[in-house]
Length: 309
Image (cartoon, rainbow, N blue to C red):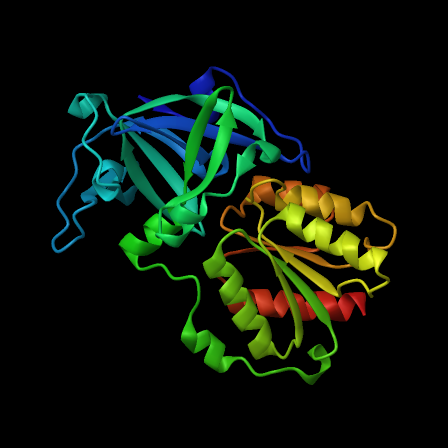
């Protein structure tokens, strides 16, 4: 069996740009219900045999060939330390995921369906989960259920050594005197990414950097600044996937506001690909980059500021 994520429901679910909605693929692994943003799912296939990878972490099942590409397979139950589900070996499924220009397979038990929900129905994880390094990035309310949304960026970073920041990049960055008087708003639900962005902007010479943990927080911050007569931010950097309000909806609000519309908005996300780029352009984003291209991000910041100035 091979299927695209959208065909798991028997029909295609399409989202318009800026509606603050999410397509969440709900699946089961080790008797637990989880969710993943459909934007990260390329396709779903039946489980296949793998080739053992020497010295790999225990959660790495092995490698397998998908058409002309060799991918690594992550055993999600092993990674999460869950008991295997009562599903036959070849009845299990593999989610082919793509994010940050990285692709791999994730072994799960079964898939339920795709649910179309609003980001207002997605909450950040509890402080307990956040403080204990849980790979749960959010909890989604679907009917009378709560579905845990997994942070696959954290999972792949742990297994494959993918990092959110590169110290050698920071060392190469030189402060730009013209940035000292400018105000930057950076928005991301990941504390690690917020810290990385803060360090990047500090190294680049920005003295006024405001960090927000989701689009709602960012919008409230901008509204409060306007009410207090503070000057608008000179540039906004935003993730796309965030609880309460996503980056596309935040961008739409900024570009639809008379006083805020001139502010350049850069979307910095793990799910940047053509479909997402089209949506970003539809809501007025000035630039879009894949995490973790920090030097590319800094170049786009410079370009946008020069254009807007």
